[in-house]
Image 1 (cartoon, rainbow, N blue to C red):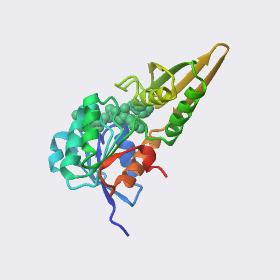
Image 2: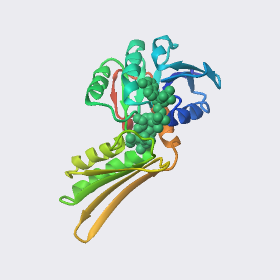
Image 3: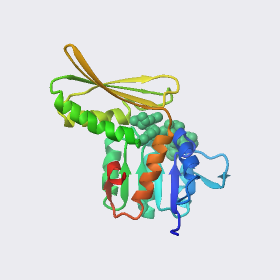
Length: 236
Ligand SMILES: NC(=O)C1=CN([C@@H]2O[C@H](COP(=O)(O)OP(=O)(O)OC[C@H]3O[C@@H](n4cnc5c(N)ncnc54)[C@H](OP(=O)(O)O)[C@@H]3O)[C@@H](O)[C@H]2O)C=CC1
Ligand SMILES: O=C(O)C1=N[C@H](C(=O)O)C[C@H](O)C1
């Protein structure tokens, strides 16, 4: 049997981090060797060593980092992956253009994947939106995203990715954002013309869909040569 893939989870105390830790603990092919958050209160929880973000240089060797943190934490984990020659799976949204450029440049040295949404449903929705936009030339295109009240970035990363798909199909999307209650994530792409409307919608009801997708991507990224991979390159 192969040795487990050594995973570092960055943003471990957050909503996504907790889902990742729980689901990773159910897999025998993955071993979480470090759980990193901005601050730490206990050194070990459920057998997993905890580190603060400013202690990244002292974490044990790892094969791939899974990052669901915030833009202010992204530069640190990217630097740690580069210095350890480890892969990076990132789902952090709201990155600046400079951070996206840094990711592209890191991909010349390590394998990386960044996706605004690790669910299979949204991967399919992106394809549907591009096809609809191209078939419905001249229709109004609006993207409405709804999320929980704690979400900081708007429009969501997924809304922007869906907008890019719509643009590839020739549409010029407009965006609207709703922050309410504990909504995990909903994305509506609406095409409207006189007398008719087409609506494509994805509703996430559990963060486990994103966490499973990211763990799958991490297992598929490990051992690959340096490069910027798309999520679809790593899906079955
Ligand atoms: N691509 C996808 O499929 C998905 C992406 N996301 C994105 O993932 C990110 C996290 O979301 P969510 O879990 O809800 O957020 P939370 O606010 O619940 O968690 C954020 C985590 O990041 C940590 N953090 C904050 N600042 C830093 C820093 N400077 N350095 C290191 N770690 C830091 C926090 O640590 P502490 O608690 O100590 O402050 C916490 O562990 C967001 O960008 C969100 O948009 C979310 C869901 C799906
Ligand atoms: O912050 C979240 O919660 C989510 N963020 C991602 C985004 O910005 O698109 C993905 C998902 O919708 C949940």
